[in-house]
Image (cartoon, rainbow, N blue to C red):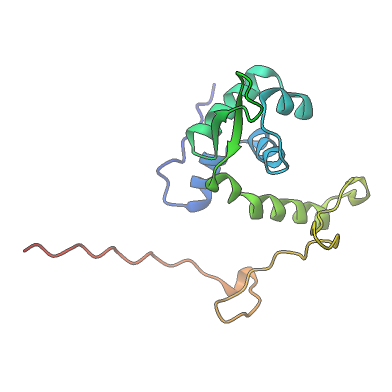
Length: 156
């Protein structure tokens, strides 16, 4: 059996993000939370996940501060799962994954929905990476460089 490596302390921000976001089930849970699902039973019904897997993923998302539990909004004894600001910050990630699939999927005609601006009903424009001066960037236009060291406060 291969033990999974933790990326929690990894220097790469992509690896660290994957540690927090988890697997594809976690991303689908976040997707549904972004569209308003809040209860365990709603997630289970919509995603068709086994209850033990769903419980583990919800717990991990809460442990990473992506979801938090709150008393049910209807006053019942149930708990609901609510996206935190960190959780809502995943929206561009999910849009990027969606747009990548829409562009490169082998059978795009099988994609049942399009993402639209609720106010205008028009499709959402493709995400773009731009430089500070507004230039459109490709991977060839970018590079990684070391983060500047933090300045230590002087003693005295």
